[in-house]
Figure 1: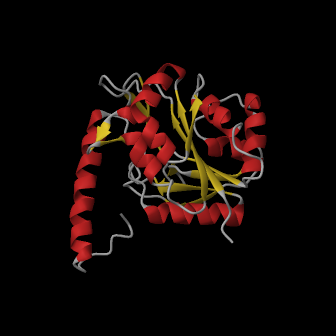
Figure 2: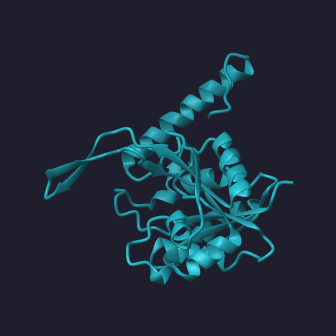
Length: 245
């Protein structure tokens, strides 16, 4: 039997690397805001109980004014964000009913996640308790100080974490309760669950599952959407399998 999963979409970041008038989650991507394309990946799934959209307090009124009809349609709840990403996730986590056994956290600026990847990571989390998608690092890595290379870092065993990251709710609650004990910066939810002593499995990620961080990323996402539309048209004629898209 498929377990119920609540989905948290953090969209409260400051978008410091995105040069534009709007923050990344709210910009248009082929006619629809980025956050909406991310939310659409989940809201029609039978195993998803509810979406929790986390926005910065200063964006709350704008968000409700522009997107109130979409929030209602998506069975979503708007939650105020915190100072850091982990604070935003913690605020949403506190709103999830205790009888929901699993929680997924997905970046609101990853709008192109393939459906098959979501199926795979959801299933892996239900088998193991926690799972994330990740890509093996293929580029050469350099340690740099003041723009000068100081060493070459082995990429053996290194993976690039993606989202959605899915966890047993009780594990994630425990991990967040202990987050003040970590001395290093918290960069994703799996880091907290690992530190709490729980095993986190990985499933194969996808190059298409990239974060929109810069204007160039937005252009690339636009190109992917147009290519997907072309492939869907071809698929209807029986020429392609679009499962990986």
